[in-house]
Structures are given as C-alpha cells and as structure tokens.
Length: 173
Ligand code: COA
Image (cartoon, rainbow, N blue to C red):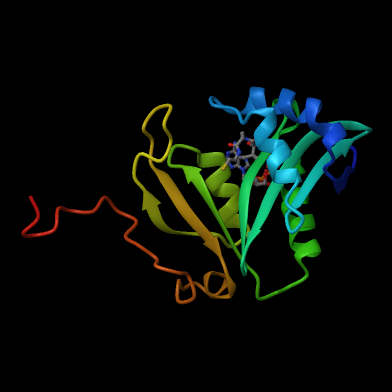
C-alpha cells in the first residue's frame, strides 16, 4: 500500500524537480520556459503531487474562455500505477468547482495508459489532429470531458470531428 499523495499548487521553486520528471516521462520534454509561461497565467491551475515530501507528479491546466485545457500531466516512472495522476485530476476538478465545466486535451494515439486514465474520468475522443507531434509525426486524439460525454454523447463538444482516418473528399485533388 502506497503512502498518501499530497497535492499542492505548483510553484516556480518546484520546477527543477518537474523538469527531472518531465525528461523521464516524454520523448520531447517541455523546456523550463514552457513551464514558466504556464505558471505565469493567472487563470490556470498547476498542481504538484508529493509522497513523503518527494515530488512524484504534476499537472498543468490552462483556462481558455470557458474551457479547461489539460496541457501536461506526468508521473515519475517509479510512482506510476499508484493513483498519483488520479489524485491530480481529482484535485483539478475539485478546484475548478463547476460540475458543468468542459475539459479538453490532446494525447498521442499510441499512449494507451494515458487514454485509459482519461477514459476513466469520462473523457471521450471527439476528433484527431493529424501528425500533431513533430518528433515522429504521430496523430493526436482530441479528448473532451463535458456534461455530455459523462452521459455518453458528444453533443456539447465544439466541432467534434471524425475519429477514423478521413477519406479524401470527392472532387478534391
Ligand atoms: N496501462 C493501462 N491502464 C493504465 C496505465 C497503464 N500503464 N496507467 C494508468 N492506467 C489507467 C488505469 O485504469 C489506472 O487504474 P488502475 O491502476 O486501478 O488500473 C488509471 O489509469 C489510474 O492510474 P494512475 O495510477 O492514477 O495513473 P499514473 O499515476 O500511473 O499516471 C500517466 C498515468 C499516464 C500520467 C503516467 O503513465 C505517465 O506519466 N506517463 C508518461 C507521461 C504521459 O504520457 N502523460 C500524458 C500525456 S497526454
């Protein structure tokens, strides 16, 4: 049984530990400047997860108008599958304090663990961004969690697009 996870606001002082986890978590990690930019946005919610005082994960979420965009979430490899990302997402939703809130994110098509995590929270794939990731040309799933997705539809998702590769449109070159 793992020790409890403590969640607190992510601060500039946390960034060295964040960068260390980020480099272990992603093939193309965010730079320090990208984290600094996100932390500087007053309407965003950025969280750090610690277990026994040691940082083990973080989440960065920005607000664009009425939509919350989860920009980054990562857990140190040694702490995965112990509920850290779940605790971060639960705390995000507690802090947003709006049961009608809409959340969105992009995730690599090959990232089964993350897609499984998001689906558990009621996110559904509503479209694809072709070749979104520049390092390997991989497609992104665009996922949404809204009042509608929680009830099994995409009715309140803006411009929900096809989730299968689109066939060429007749008449186009
Ligand atoms: N395989 C299958 N399902 C998985 C999984 C895996 N490797 N990891 C998480 N899940 C699903 C499971 O349903 C899991 O519940 P369970 O353990 O009871 O079966 C649920 O998500 C919650 O898992 P949790 O322990 O809260 O997730 P985590 O703390 O391990 O973090 C990630 C999940 C995706 C954040 C973590 O694997 C990670 O940091 N990956 C690298 C960075 C990344 O890909 N971030 C997402 C970018 S969009």
